[in-house]
Image (tube, rainbow, N blue to C red; front, side, top):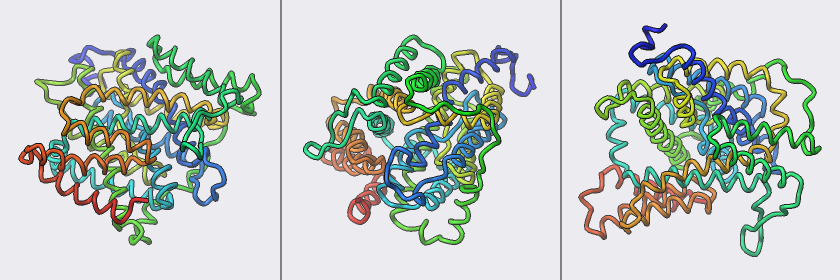
Length: 445
């Protein structure tokens, strides 16, 4: 085991790897509660049950997808990077694909499955480098920041801090309401923990908020801690079944845009996470990431597995950097994280205390972390600033990640051509320009 994971070469040991794996788990454990709440659209009232994914099944799919993805990453790529259903992509899946486009979750899962299969093919063929190089760095950073703002906006809504206002679209909510006060308290606590550098600050912030909510009578106290694992039957295999029996619902222009969005965000999010965490761990060699292809293959395989189980896109988590900071250097840490996700399956009753008020602070803080990429954009170059800004601002304002990406990818060729820099535009960007123009003409709601 030590030899396979190169403990001696990397200057690590079992203690450091176990501690690192535990730290990573605590840093990303919030997804066990947030993902089921998001995909079941629990914060949206007056929806038919048929539009909602089964809460318990999504919880099991989330834990298993995280465990399997982390195991593949640990054994195949040997990186101290854990995987789980991604924030941002789950919001796109629920609020844009299901709620705005009115696409059934069964079809949406088939879209995730398709994106994972395409990701695998791109990884095996080596085309991934060409695609990565085709997208301007500024637009990659803009997408990350835009998703961050979108997630934060959802967090404020779930907290009741931002509400509908017919006069000005949105306005401030009743800050004296019990559940809103609880969310504000949770946000303050989480900010304090994160500012102090507490490992797993988001997770512990949720725990403290839930406990205070129970004492305040705002959250019902669970009757048990450990229980049998919920059934995954409502979601398991649905993506394949829908893919086979209803191909017309999966292979149309609207779903192509959805699939491309799943693929694009996962593709670049994973690449960025691999580079960032590996560099932090000192695994980069001459500015080259060894076994990068294996890391991308692990991620794309996890997406396919997750879709079959019944969850949105599974991706590498930047929270893995917390585990690296705690000492993790090898894939053994990812195996530890995977084991903890499997163990969490038996603590489903505890999720009853994780309400929208409890998860809202986590969404807001994740948004704060994601908008850090704004500093990487050269705002002094107007031809770059315009498409980047439109990408970022359109996501929360239109409640759609896909629309934000479309805005940026349409304006980028326009501003670059007018600036006299047409030769710098990769031909792939022109193809995407046409795709997204057609998207607005025929599909945008």
